[in-house]
Length: 283
Image (cartoon, rainbow, N blue to C red; front, side, top):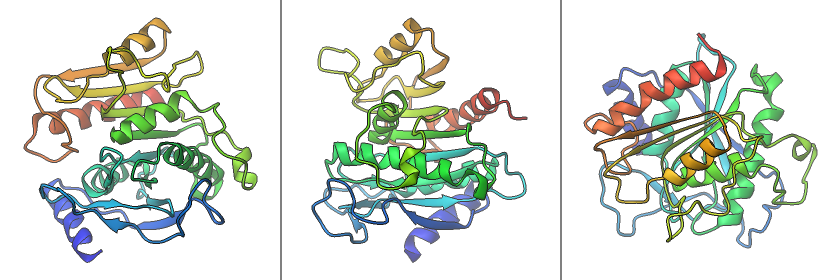
């Protein structure tokens, strides 16, 4: 934990961000739906990792939200962040905590979702639906606007965010409490180099079906991303005449977060910031 805090502090100093104070909220006070293991803290993932100052966690059985509150510039909007990791682990600092610190500095309440991995597709979907409901249930307490609660995802987390954005009507678990009577529809969605959104024949995966109720979406990817580029998603949104913004930058690859030194990592944050303000009507 201390190593992780030092990493975030160093990142904030390099990027002139202030570290928002965080707390942790567990998603499921009782039994976690569909989970067979007992609840325990996440485990550091060290298998076949390349370093690069990335903190990876896995074997998550007790999903949680790490809450980063903004300062006096709070704008009433909240963003639930889904880190990536190929559904094997979560790159919790690169695509979670560092992004949360940046968003909190912009006035957003940022919440990093520790969803279930490895390879728990249904479980992770249940987790993000519960997370949206939980945050919306705390709108009054946290001084949020209940129609300004969105999701953001990177790589596999982008896939999860896309499924949550278009599949919010799919009831994935039996109601646990009053929170589950609240809508889990995100009000906006940001997908940064989302992974595995196309099938082997280059079609949009069936789990992502935009409808007239799909909220505004922001998509960013590098042209040299070695994983599939989500053009079919853009085409589906266009055909449905839905509001979206799609950016393709020439270089950057995959898995860069917002760390300086990578052209894609430096390009998407100002674009996303501008889009968020315009979409939510913020100054």
